[in-house]
Image (cartoon, rainbow, N blue to C red; front, top):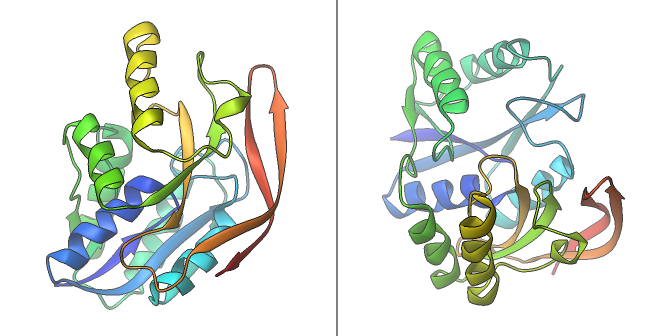
Length: 221
């Protein structure tokens, strides 16, 4: 099937892309929506510009569009973009977010394309282990939940970090994949990358117990 893959630069969309490539689908485009506000309901905001490097590293053309970030209006912005693409399906990295999946499903139905969700309702711990086993290099780029402090910013997700996330889930009931907004990630390397994304300059933005890494400079190496 010829598909477009929604990507944010984070781990879930990157793993969903890996799955469809592994299954032999033709990924014609990567698609990124760039919200004009930092409280978008549907899309990542910090460091979304790094999807340019993600696409270049993947060797797959990137299609981008701006969106207001206003609830529901941003779904229509996505619909307009997807309607223009000559693909049969749209891939997304939704795992448990009914809000996200229901809207992507509706948009796909309205533009005559299949909604493909390779990770839907899979076990979060197995997904995290899969990322580690496949040697994805995933960096924590934002933390927004109790138990996740400033020391997590810039940290790679490895077995030690995963063990700590499991313990934080036990203590505070956070999602170990961060789909409740507990944390955001950046993928610096994936099995389908031709080059690795290297962060050369970043600033910590921290306020009231949460924050993120603002990437000031990055390159392919």
